[in-house]
Length: 540
Image 1 (cartoon, rainbow, N blue to C red):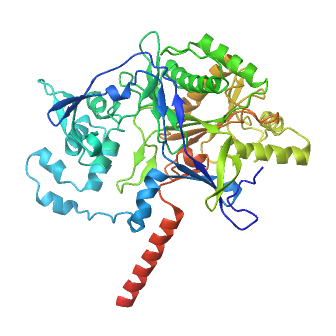
Image 2: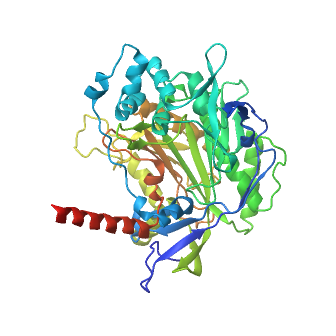
Image 3: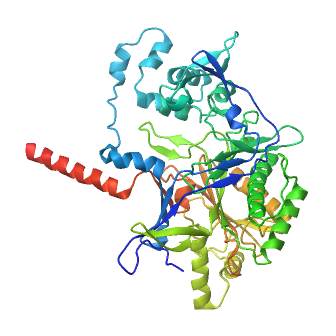
């Protein structure tokens, strides 16, 4: 097994190449077809988001995976769709200079109409207002500054105006995308504007909807989107609250919503594993009920334990709740409207190269592997299973300040299956962690009762944190690989509020560093900048 580093004993760099081809089973039952607006005089709809059958993805974006030189610093992923164009023009790798901002200049041109005042504001002030305003009237005015609407006879927005781009693709007519994106993340924007701008299926692009959750009482509705060309190699999936179930706050999130978000994760994972093992899965376009889902999980385990190998042997799950963006345009957290969760399967073996020549395959990166490596070292040094000791330490916790008149428990919530607790050493000031009480290492090993307990505890954790005032929370999963040895590793979830001084998101928390350029091209940009700096120094 390779050490987790890109450096070889021969003094070369090792890297992994992902060339994804895959089939996606369509588990969506209904077609929620609707109009998105108008495109150059014609109506445009969202039919591209509702494929009639399973999806065959051929030659998705090539992704390079490069282990960091130091194993404790994770792995970098480079998407060629972003990096290849910059390889042709590496000197484009730079951030734009800040705009000149003067409220005095803007105010000098103000007339009595409020719309003119808004239109004259510097962009940074527009962004700040879009992020912080709680007045729907403010936000509607900003909406009209960043995109074009189609209205009904009563003046209500019924869609956006679209224009045709390269290859005839329809794109929304958005004049200020940065303002647009911040605005639609503001919960105070009226829902009728949110719907046509981003929530209606298809408003955000052509990603196919391949799954759906709907509660019997009609109060919960979630779509599962396929992200074909993903920064996570081999695609990933996003479970998003639907346009008729608007959820921007955790206080609005129902128990059924959390059950649905997680059900889509379990369902996609079990269905993909069943297909890998040659098991028959439901052919019709329909969600699997709880009983059928559990039956499928047990069948996957039965066949897997007979020795059938898996090409994809680990899960990836993450949740960015909340959004913020500085007036300077710096993204502080998350990238999506509505409450949503993302998930994928990671390949077991990946093609590995040194200087363009293929060598023996290696294991793909998953953040749970960092725990696996630590467990091996812990056992080798102590002869003990780490998680048994961890659980015992949590239960036996004593205060470090020696105060006997203060609470000493780290446990926030516990039932017969799980424990939600405060880690002794928090990596976020308000970090919470969640783990099973039994050695359940991944969601394949988690039975229905354990999964329900995990789901309930997750919602409890987010309700607690947001009740305390947290507005942005990153949640990630550390999972054991399905075919890992019996080492006592337990499924672990970390809930990491982004405090005002420390932003971040779930990829970074897993030490998955996403890059849009090749390192050599950034070196070109740096050398060029160094030359420019020398010229400026000489001129002075």
